[in-house]
Image 1: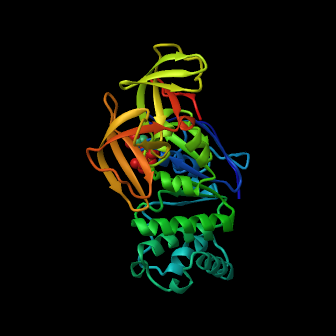
Image 2: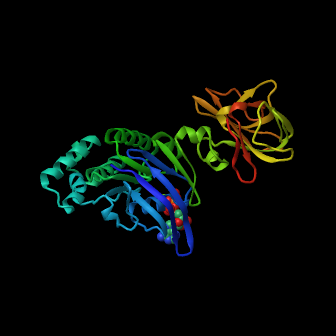
Image 3: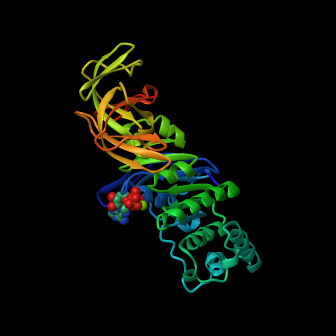
Amino acid sequence: MAELKLTGARKSFANIDVLHGIDLAVKDGEFVVFVGPSGCGKSTLLRVIAGLENVTSGEVLIDGERVTHLPASERGLAMVFQSYALYPHMSVAKNMAFALENMGLKPAEIQARVARAAAMLRLTDYLDRKPKALSGGQRQRVAIGRAIVRDPKIFLFDEPLSNLDAELRVATRKELAALHAKLGGTMIYVTHDQVEAMTLADRIVVLNAGRIEQVGTPLELYNRPSNAFVAGFIGSPRMNFLPAVVTSDDGTLRLTVGERELELPRTASGLVAGARVTLGIRPEHIDVASDTGMLGATVDLVEQLGGEAFIYASAPGLPQITLRQDGQSQFHRGDAIAIRFAADHLHIFDATTGAALARP
Ligand SMILES: Nc1ncnc2c1ncn2[C@@H]1O[C@H](COP(=O)(O)OP(=O)(O)OP(=O)(O)O)[C@@H](O)[C@H]1O
Ligand SMILES: [Mg+2]
């Protein structure tokens, strides 16, 4: 198993710059997840690590050794793709053994590795089947098995679960977490599903338009996002962003939000009267008060999920606000509510750059 380092990794296709200089260190045994919107460069970054694409400039190091110009076959990594493309005419065992046969391993060694991987992935009873006689989840496990038998230095996964239905995704996600605990290998995993990122990652790398926005543990990113992009990407439903103007910041921060004046017993970093900021507050950090809240709002929609409810409400001069209630909501469309932000969970971002100015 191995550690990985990228320094100033840039990638351009013709005149399109896709990666703008990525610096990243992944520790031995770490499970790192790349997240970001479609087209931000997640797959390209993974392919650069795998050696399926060459960097335009910068370096790739595995265990301190420069592999920047080594082909994929010489990097000792294994990649699992979204479209797992098993060989349809080969049995499960043969699908897993194939690469090892090409590497010239002895039959006894191959059989031992396949048996071990199959046991780990609960595929032992399916070794003689062809892929078409397997469920989607079983096929995806075979694809993972093909990577495991090669005993790679680093596992690379590119959205391996996105072809599975919701239930199977959750089950396979848990299996992957268990597999990482068992194998202890270095794993790099691409997804645009922030729940997968939160649940699997030791650390998450948030990418946006070919740049790293922030790297941190799931809870670091949730609790202390360094900018509005990360804040909006991590957490579901998404954080609310409300435009506000600072009126004073002298031990107490006073802001105009919509048609209301809010007073917060805290300061931000040197804000002056007139500064335009964005308040960030997660749906789970807003309370509904039936009496006096910070803002008056009208309920647009209630989504009852049984164990929790989401309320979408409008307040004058502000974008629609999402709030989460534990259990079942007693509110209905058209109800007047008063909402209160948990001030110690309020984020303040620069309205122009999105940089965090004050965090909980
Ligand atoms: N071979 C290529 N030639 C030109 N442009 C490319 C090539 N491969 C990728 N790109 C461009 O690079 C950008 C990043 O693509 P990439 O596949 O890395 O995104 P992604 O983050 O994996 O997106 P998704 O979540 O949709 O899979 C996109 O704008 C894409 O069009
Ligand atoms: Mg991709």
